[in-house]
Image (cartoon, one colour):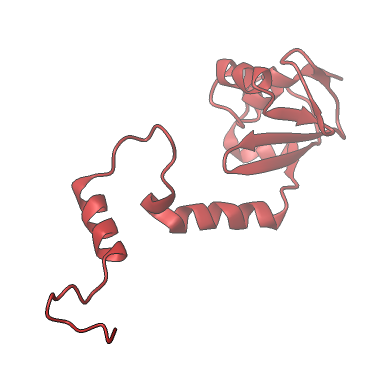
Amino acid sequence: MEARIDKWMWATRIFKSRTIAVEACKKNRVMVNDVPVKPSRMIKPGDVISIRKPPIIYSFKVLAITTNRIGAKLVPDYLENVTPPEQYELLELQKISGFVDRARGTGRPTKKDRRDLDDFTTPVFLDEDFDFGL
């Protein structure tokens, strides 16, 4: 049995809607066996799907085909997560870095972010009478 990749990704809850799944395919963020695919690409059990959701690339092995949306508890019956651990380490580093590595388009830093950044970047000894020993 085969199914369209956009429909399968929606049915297995990788994406919230088919529209988002189609957009990801059109932006070359979805690959089957390391080949970028169109939303209409038919997949079968055994295919490995790589999905780039910045900052990491998720990889899933297709175990079974479905075109109907399934419950979250049934998802492991249809796909196997084969994402390398290094990718999850990148995600943790992204979370730790916080506002310093701000994603483009997330808006300006808040006043608290700016103050924290100022505290981080300015030296502790800003006393004018301090002799640097020069």
